[in-house]
Image (cartoon, rainbow, N blue to C red; front, side, top):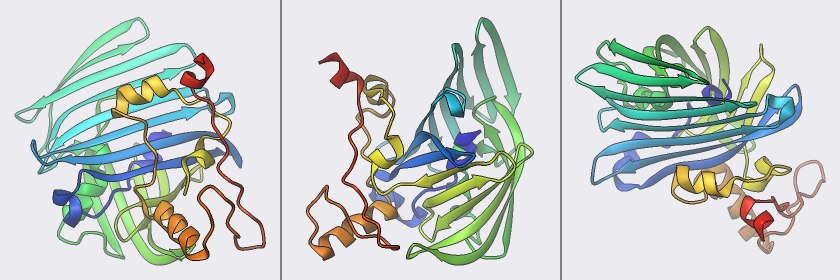
Length: 290
C-alpha cells in the first residue's frame, strides 16, 4: 500500500528520450507521525530497447509492519506492459508475482507462502501497469493540467489484478520553494493526496485514512537513518546502490549549499533557525561483515 503512495512521480515525458535515469529518490515513510521506513524509487528509459523501467524498494520497521517489498516493471515506449516482478516479505511470509504480457493478455504466476496460483487474463485496450501512471497522464492530451480528471484502468502489481482509478489534478501551489500540483488519486478503494512538481516529481504523499505519508528527502540518509541497508539486495534489484540525487529536492539542496559556500556534508541553516546535521551514517550489510 505504501508503494501506491509514491509511484505517481516521474520526470517530464518530453525529456525521456535523451535520458537514461529519469528520476531517482529516497522518501521517508511516516505512520502516525513516526518515521517507520524508507522508499527508493527509480525510473529509467532504455533507448536501445525503447523500454521504460520502474524499480522500487520499500522497507519498514516493526512499527510499520516489518515489510520488505520490491517491484521491477517494464513497459514499451507506448506504455504497453511487458513484464514485472513483485516480491514482498511481511514478517516471515514471502509472496512473489512474476507476470508477462503479450497480445493484450496477462499471464502471471503467484506464490504466496506455500500456495501457488496462476492468473490468465485478457486486458482492455489502454490498460497499463500502475507504476507508470504518471507517464500515461503526461502523454494524455491534457497532461498535468489543473482542474483535470483522469480515469484509468491499471494493473495493481501487488495482486496482479486490474483496477479502476481516478486522478484529480487540483491547483498549483508552492512547497519549500518548489512549485507542485496537488493531485487526488483514488485506486483500489483508497484515496491518496500527492504533491507533484511541474516535471512530475513527487514531493510528498499521504493517505489520511491510513495515517501514512511519504516525503522525498534531499539526502538518502535522512530517509534511511536507523536502518541497515541491504546492499546485496539493492545491487541485485537496481544493478547498483542508488544515491537518490536525481530529483528536484536534492538538486535544490545541493544548489543552496554551493551558493552559501557550505562544504559538502556540513550543516545548512534552515527556516526557523535550526541547523541540518551532516548526513548520518547508515549501517550496511557489507560494513557489518567487515
